[in-house]
Image (spheres, helix red, strand yellow):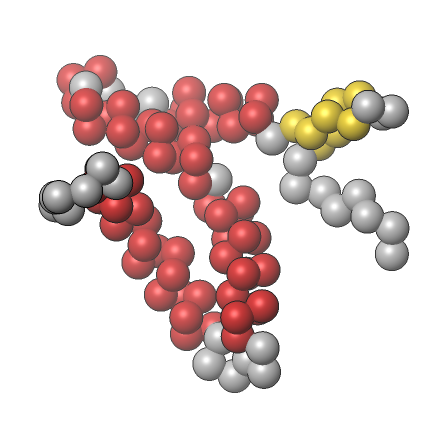
Length: 102
């Protein structure tokens, strides 16, 4: 448990996912010629695939109210609603898609 800073709770929650996200990433970068850039891209993609924010919400709810049961299904439903983007011309767009021109 972290103490002594206003971010202690955030650090405690981050520790729940750190090994699952960062250790595999660190080993995957062993042969990288640009590890800093590759780490940023891989970590960002990992967060998207891991669906971290909905998991954090569900896990915090389970930690604070363990008798209420799991809320992972609710978190996944909420995530589907949260991953939309807004474009002033096209309206709602699906998240996780590269809309840049190649």
